[in-house]
Amino acid sequence: MNSGTGSDPAVGDARPATSDATEAKLSALIGRISTHLDQGALLIGADVGDGYRSDATDERGPRPALVLRPRHTADVSLILSTCNDLGQPLVIQGGRTGLSGGARPREGEVSLSLERMTHLESVDQRAGTIVAEAGVTMQSVQEAAEEAGFLFGVDIGARGSCTVGGNIATNAGGIRVLRYGMYRAQVLGLETVLPDGSVLSSLKGLPKDNSGYDLNQSFIGSEGTLGVVTKACLRLHPLPPLQVNALCVLPSLAAAQALLTRLRQELGPLLSAFEVIFPEVYAGVAAGGFATPPLPVGAGLYALVEIQGQDKSENHERFAATLMSAVEAGLVDDVVVSQSPRDYRGLWALREACSAFIFSMDRMVGFDVSIPLARMQDFLADAAVRLLAIDSSARPYVFGHLGDGNLHYMVRTDRDEDIADAVFAVVAETGGAISAEHGIGLDKKKWLPLVRSASEIAAMRRMKRAFDPNLILNPGRVFDMETEAAGKATR
Ligand SMILES: Cc1cc2nc3c(=O)[nH]c(=O)nc-3n(C[C@H](O)[C@H](O)[C@H](O)COP(=O)(O)OP(=O)(O)OC[C@H]3O[C@@H](n4cnc5c(N)ncnc54)[C@H](O)[C@@H]3O)c2cc1C
Image 1: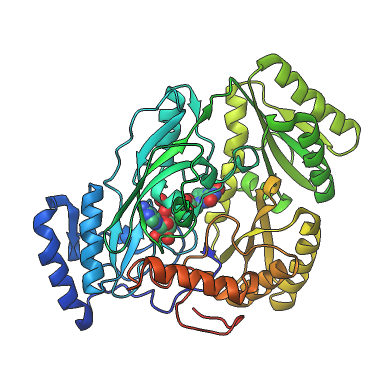
Image 2 (image 1 turned 90 degrees about the vertical axis):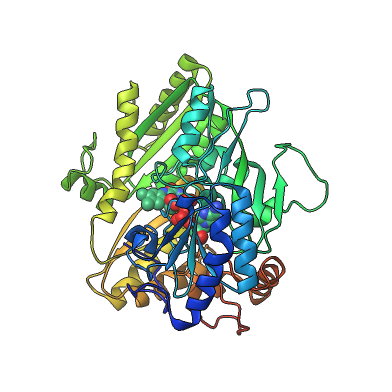
């Protein structure tokens, strides 16, 4: 699946990234750091596996000539300060599950992979926090939290491979943003290393700290362009004794939006997820055997909703009664409520099967967009018309986090670039965002000026220069540094 889909001109070459211009820098770098690092810290040449050439998008970059795999923050500091001295650009890699090409190498870059920084401290029961190194997977954080009687508030399909560092750099979202907020809301402290090697350590985990600028916020969602995250203090929530979900069959998007409003009003903070699956995706999941849906195909729309509560019987009854009243009001045509942990997992497996179905298809270009709820119908209608004007065989496949106004809008087409221009234009016209959660990376920067003003992009460039004056960290991600007129596409 493509993402976006403005691929970068510097990618797609399978040769090692060792042009003459970089050779001298590389050997100087290796010479200056290798004696200070352990044996497994450097992968060179043929030892660099294919996986380091990309993230979860289809496109591959050149194989990095060198992969640096620090074990400690001090190693990261040494690597960055040396690269900074030499002007050696780096691509930062976590679990490489990103969907915008941010971790995909470009010519001349060496990889800085946080995969060996996997230490997870035990849960601080009193504070309700956990401290994790950047390479710890999301699933490890979730499991450690659960064992200690807590819940980690973010969950995404890539949980088994994506890492704390990548999650922070992309400000990951997922299925429970409605209740717990995005990854940003889980971060109580960070340790980061700046390109000059200086370490910013702010891991006190204080819920309140207004002592000067909150520098941590700058790194969250900055896609590795400002500093390298090495450690994080993460907020945990009480583990809810009750988790119940339900699959609803709905006549239309308008009904889904009315249901969302009703559930918010009647269930308040109990409501923890509200996902939608459009009929083409639901049918594809069923036909391809990716999951066995409990309700028949052919409806207008499907919604998967979840509550998490503290009072098992009262909350469950309230959920069921609220859904029944939505059926009586004509908002819901049919509903199945999970009655066991097995049912519950089965319904979530159906939602995750949507990604598996989409990833299984060729010629698929993916958009991860935010649209104001009031304009979502306009977006879908306008985008459909413009797609067909470009490619009469183009078909949208849609699912996503309706509770947050976030749709994964996929189109099957051979006209990626034209379709992307059209979809992003409609996103901008409807007051949306071209990336709700996956970030801009390399693949979407062409369209950033559609949704960010020239002043905003100029301020971002000034921040980049302030943190990374020699432009060694993830250069060319999110935006390019050269001065350009607003609205002018750069790639
Ligand atoms: C099946 C599937 C489902 C997904 N579902 C969701 C979803 O629901 N919500 C969502 O938000 N995303 C989702 N994603 C996208 C992806 O998992 C997230 O973007 C994730 O946060 C990336 O983490 P990672 O460790 O794989 O980062 P990578 O892909 O390795 O890197 C992502 C970006 O972060 C930078 N980076 C990585 N580590 C660091 C670090 N230590 N310091 C500084 N910068 C760093 C990289 O340079 C790159 O720019 C999904 C992906 C897949 C494949």
